[in-house]
Image (cartoon, rainbow, N blue to C red; front, side, top):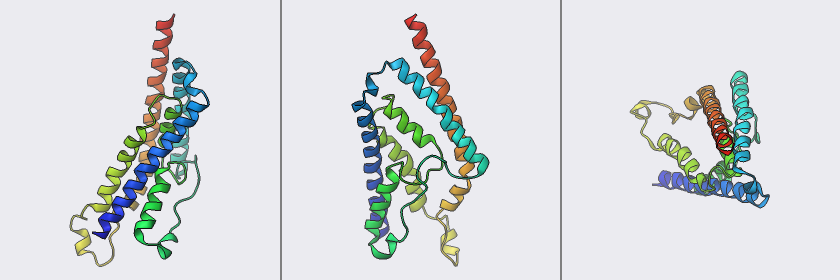
Length: 197
């Protein structure tokens, strides 16, 4: 029961923070007048912005490291020594849900924020981002270890380390998705230009 409440606290905090991050970025961009730029320009800027992000992923793959964009920090583990697990899980969820305050494996997170800033995706896309992160993460935390944990003499890793070893594959997939997005936006920009002329 405690484990489920800790997972629920993390999930709720992550979702709230992700929604807030996208909302703040969208609101700030709107206040700066980004939404007043012609749609064609925003599409062109969106496509152009995907290219350096894809290159960041490819560079991280080559160096076998995390995404080079963003803060190089994580939620302090020392919180577990002086606080209840519900508080720690909530703070961890808030921190990781904000998207920009901790390590990221791939640059696709930055692309999602960038597209929201350009008004090419709505502020509430934070819900989809949150669910897309939380569903596999919660399955990882909650799922039975298929009998391994029951037979193991030591504590069993829930799979996070195995996932981190697949970092370069995730970065490659991110680079591919960013490239496809750039091409799709370039085609959309071309379509708008051909219609306008």
